[in-house]
Image 1: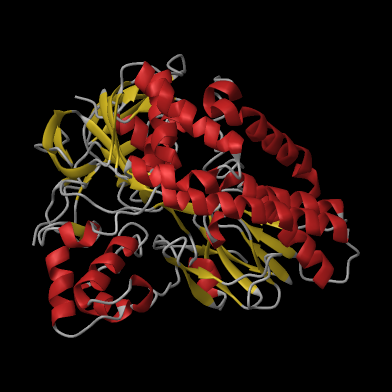
Image 2: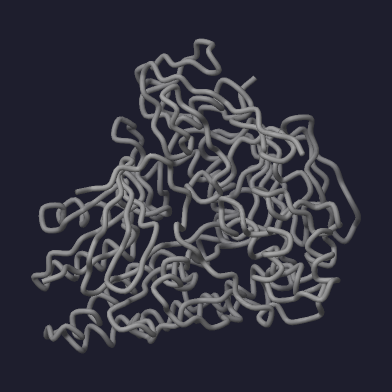
Length: 96
Length: 451
């Protein structure tokens, strides 16, 4: 199930990427947050309870939407645009 | 000669840049976003097709004018998008751009860093599907998405009705608007709001549109809790009549805005308590001069006054900077701009009365309410530190880590201050100011340093 719902701008070229190793599809101009949350329900697990998180502010302030990319970089999903072929990895988080 | 720098390409930063360029100055404009406009006039990605009217509604002409001004300036300034200023000190700014750090030396700087939502959390606010009001608007404006299929908007402030209206217009199912301000507060605020009749009319229009389209608008209604298994499934809210439940899959909430003051702090600006903003703000004179020579402040980053005021303050601050550098500026224009700012200031006082911050929020916050979402610090843990005799916010932070996480208190700072004040029996203006630290946002490891 998706968390976000597309309401407009649906006629953009599709971009293939992988989400936790499985094939997924986003659109050109999507942020990683949009691409991931229009085909799933969360972005990461929290650092203290491993509860799912899906971002909060969408403007680069809350730092709650980090995802890992295949090249090892950790990026803010709300302010990073999706690129074709990207490997997006969601970290499960940690529990105390 | 060292250049003039502007931090932030929102309404304040763009108007400041325009003013400097008009006087023959070639400024550096540093902006964290990929495209100019700030949050309020944020531009959608270049391959999106919606019209300005679709994106910005009644503000479309202002947004377009600002974007056009900016486009016309592009060759006349050193514009650096995707550039975070993560540290600032006398004469130096540390920046990050595409994984590379660099230093910018400046002669004078205009700080126009904008604002984020002011958050008073409710239980369940970390569940997927819960976003700030600003976030809900960005999802739609910047990505053409709604935060869910059945959305509830809650809190207070001008954004509340605006975003609910924008969602409904775009075809989202808006279940309800829960306005925490009582109708009586809005009636009392009317004299102040009449200082800007057009803005007042727009606010009334949004609300009337929502009710006439069958969307429930409740006043004096507060969010009790948000529930769900791994995502939002329902919420509870209460008003004078008692508690009610509502099934939904998304919630957006906030109580107005808070200024991004970290860089002003690192630059050494003096701060004072603002009753109106219920926050510590960098001091500035009516022209935008801070307490530090060569440092100027404009826009919501120096105190919440909205986008119109930000454009005016950006121009005024640039004129002050020019004047201080020995340029000839038009004194009549300066006086005019200051008068406009004063008029908007009166309207702001009305707005704060209309959308009062629920001052009893802290008293009602349960001990297990999570205040800090980065470090998962609860209201009870903060209260325990206060119970040990601490009341100064930086000390409380040292003891329980509230505000010490990756967001550096942007999301939890206002709420933490309310809890500490309430628990220690002090006015919220007398528990100290949470200090900023560099880097103001997390930096990746393995940075390259610009030669």
